[in-house]
Structure formats: structure tokens, C-alpha cells
Length: 114
Picture 1 (cartoon, rainbow, N blue to C red):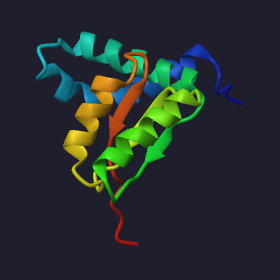
Picture 2: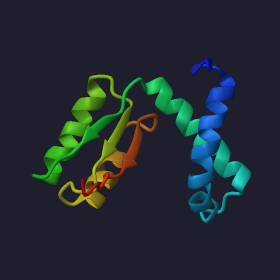
Picture 3: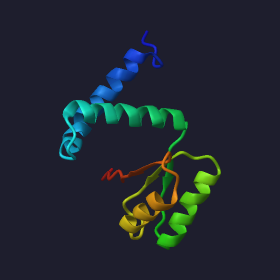
Picture 4: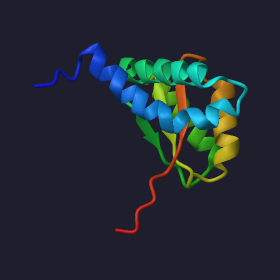
């Protein structure tokens, strides 16, 4: 029986994640080791956040930023903005500018034909 909360389990999970993510981070002037450390740091922050809010706003980009601010005011420390949000590059930039540095911001959308 594996304990999901053990540090070895955590390291295995982040190592698997890190392998796929580190290649793109290496291009950001980081060594592979530095990239893996960044992935581990982000993983630990996500675990500490307790939840990841998914912000999907197909209307006004300004309203999307307002909703992100409201989520943070309610205690949310991790937000994923979906790429099908209206003007998502602007929303992401504004969220990063306006939200505290300790709030994790992510971007993505799962596309599935089924």
C-alpha cells in the first residue's frame, strides 16, 4: 500500500511532471535541474493552495479579471484561466499585474473529441 502523502510519492509525481515540463523551462535559460526544482516548487504551492479554481469567461475580459480578484479575496491561491476565455492573453496579463505574487496563475484548456 503506497502512502500518497509520503515524500517519495510526491517526488515521483513531480519528477514525472517535471520531465514533461522541464524541456520548455530549459528554453527559459534554466538548466534541467533548475527547471525540475521550479516544477517541484509549483507542485508544492498547488498542494498548499487546497483547490484550483477554473476561470472560464466567454464574455467580457474585464469581468473575468474581476472574478479572479473576487476568487482571491475569498481565499483562492491558485487559478487556471481557460484558453477559450475572451481575450485570454489580456486577461492573464491583467490578472498577473493585479493579483498578489503568491497567487498561482495557470493557463490551459482540455480539448477532447469524446
